Length: 133
Image (cartoon, rainbow, N blue to C red; front, side, top):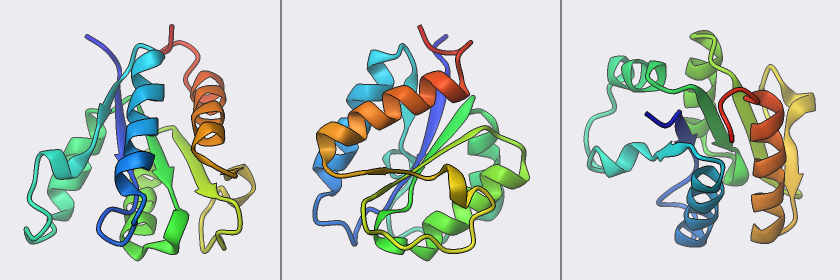
């Protein structure tokens, strides 16, 4: 079974969602891991259930959180991941202000989608070396 990567990222507010998601997906899979995008398993208009988020996250080996666009829900989910003790890889597009994250100094910024792929590749290898091939 391939290690699961829980992905936190802006969805409805991001005009580049599909491109950003595609790059994350490709990078995670290239490392021999399986990405988990929560909205693939729930409707976007469903009532948010914190217990379900915790349960789904705890199945993951590592969490990738993209804080681009400063979405409160992304910060909430990152806090849940940190609270349950999961390793986290935190990224954001250059110029994104970072708010209230425990690992603010670990945020890896990227200029474009090519750099996002490189940053994720490097960060996942560094934070989960036993999980990637």
